[in-house]
Image 1 (cartoon, one colour):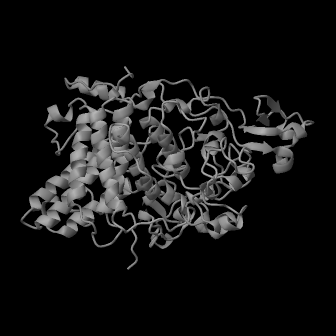
Image 2 (cartoon, one colour; image 1 turned 90 degrees about the vertical axis):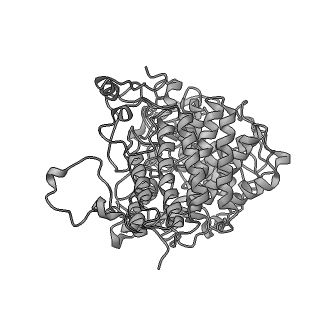
Image 3 (cartoon, rainbow, N blue to C red; image 1 turned 45 degrees about the vertical axis):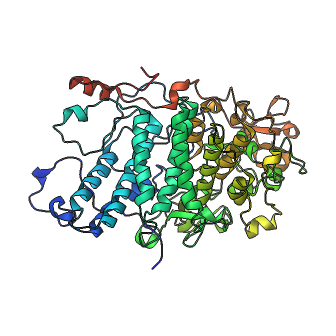
Amino acid sequence: MKKHILILLSVVTLGLTSCSEFLERPPLTSMDDQIYWTSENSLRLFSNGFYENYFVGYNSAWGVDYAPLRGYYFSDDFTSSGKQAGFETQAPASRTSISETPSMMITYAGPTWNFAWVRKSNLFLERIETMKNVYITSEVYNHWSAVARFYRGYEYSRLVSVFGDVPYYDKVVAETELDLLYKDRDSRTLVMDKVYDDFAYVLENMRLSDGNVQYLNRYIAAGFISRFMLFEGTWQKYHMNNNEKAKKYLEQAVAAANIVMSSGKFSFGSDFRSLFGSQDLAGNKEVIMYRHYDAALGVTHHVASYSNLTESQGPAPNLSLAKSFICNDGNPYKLSTVANADKLDIKSMVATRDPRFEATFWDAPKKESSTLLYACKFIDRDGVKLYPGPYPAMYGSNTNTNDAPVMRLAEVVLNWIEAKAELATLSGPAVTQADIDASINAIRNRPLDATAIAKGIKKTAPLTLASLPNDPDRDSDVPALLWEIRRERRMEFVFEHTRLLDIKRWKKINYMSGAANPDIMLGPWVNFQTEYPEWLIAAKVGKLKVKKADGTIVTYDGTNAASMVGYYIPENISDRDAFTARVYLAPVGNNQISEYQDKGYKLTQTALWN
């Protein structure tokens, strides 16, 4: 039997409200709570109802929530034409939901004010408790309690990343328990201490294997725990100056990652592009969990379509992101001795940069990108050869079937090395060269595919602690090692879930300002006469602009084609509205605050949003 997972869209769930007036007889296609909880199989089936929300992959059909490229595009890595999308400017009228449909707020990379999944995980735990020593053994009880606690910790980690303080619930609250239903927020530290306890239980009690390798197991859970604990540990350090809690959470991040890394089950044996464009990720030892798509079963997505060179990309990768890619000699471009390393046109960067640049971006300017730099990361090599179409179902519309990596070894090792480096700044053990070799250098030593080899792409030289690059563009408050670890994350996770959350936890949201970071307002260097003469036309007079290295802006007037050489300025671009530190966290809705008041309770607004 093929070892993959198909997200089950019709698994049993428990409703959030009573609908008894519509139920004259027990429905044949849903569960009866009074008789359902009698076997381990019932637990497994109920657990499947969480997969769609937490292991989204490329989502499905036209869905974009928590999907790379189509959902995660708001950060300093990406730029659009026209005015840049802004942060929230005032508290919304309402911000709440009880839906169990996966949903994210793009500018916060997380959920809205919704505790439906918290309730569902608590209900799961309570039902497991009723089965103990009656229908299930202690081992079964321990494993499924760990599964339910993992889901609860996952949801609270996301809620805290968006809102900070949130009310914490460890039980199903009845409609009559108004003091609990309308309790004010608990501090994020109290909540994350509870999450820490849940995760500690998970790492001790979840099965290493639950049969099918794609069922939730300790390795998969540990990968996510390393993600969430790294986030909270660095948030506590940079935002709250709470080094004690920072160490606690970072140490759990390291411990969780160690479970994966020491297992011997996973390794870097895949070229980078194959991680995202393959039709079947079964057997790929870098992938800890993936979502499988199968057109015959009606499980498809559309992410590959938006990497096929025909569909437009806006926002699209900008100059700031392109500049961050290290050269293949292991140095940032300003320090590199590689020939043409200082040339920032696409062709030169493909030839001189880390192989992930070539595997992530098309190797020539594309009008379909708002910056002319087009990301083709989420489609296989054959798919882009079909440009400009027509495309078969696997590469067009919402019928794509390439598998989505849900948790990768690269993320685990980068979470691990960053957590260790942060702990070293908090009086922890120093990072060793062996640590670097097991993480960053293991990633850099991935095999290259035939296409990259044919282009002359070279693997990037290893990072050595004895000669860390002293990047002249490094922030003065970031040590050189952490700077290179952050660079590695930026190269590795383009259009994936990480970037906005990374710059938030590092307290670097100012990177989103074009005034402070002008490279986010530009595309790569382009010589329009030789690279893209298609745009030297009457329709582009007064619209096509480039910025010279000295800052001079040249506008195409129909006669100055030879002067149209420089960094591409996206059409009609303007900076996003000014923002303040309050955008690190989301406000709750005014209606929710009023609802509390109407019941005689108080819901505190998010800090700085009053």
